Image 1 (tube, one colour):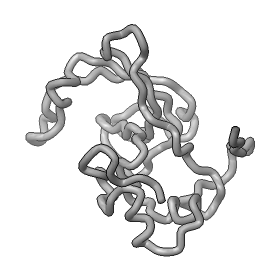
Image 2 (spheres, one colour):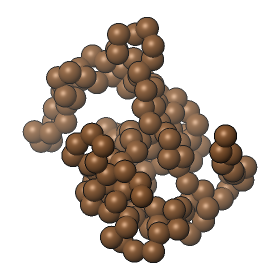
Image 3 (cartoon, one colour):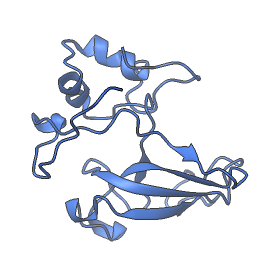
Length: 156
């Protein structure tokens, strides 16, 4: 059994800001048994402020039910779930506030290997990585979307 110190100081700064607090690397979504794949659970970051109704750090730890729909956003031809996900539900616990994400639509579901986003320095600090090239191993060099196939883009 490997024990990990998850920390107990809620005011610890994020690794993205030079601190030691980081998301757990095993925070991956899972299907709830007995639901025929219609319900899953996972972890997410959410946009704070504006039309989202979320206020930031006070929302961390709260859970939300997401319902995947096929609706497009009114300001463009984007959005909507993959047809295989429409009408499925996911309960997510907010473990991070995405201050770089804006809009009422924004929940970033945490999926290991799906992209480190704007905060590449966080991975470097959390995993004691020296170069940007090594950070690319986490998400196959695609920081906004991650590996394009199963098994691609895994931590070194």
